[in-house]
Length: 79
Image (cartoon, rainbow, N blue to C red):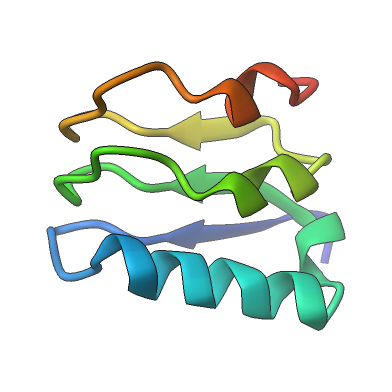
């Protein structure tokens, strides 16, 4: 597999649920292969800090959320 993508959208995922799933990716070392992450339409107020560990991300979609600030974690990524 050249790249992996994961989608959490349609408002079915809470912040905590997304955070736990992303942490599981880190535990399984799958985060190193993930290039696309879709977090749109989840009514998120913040992005889980664990996203900073996904250093191979080339695309992250955070549209249509209620972010209260631009997440510093994303600024650290080489997107």
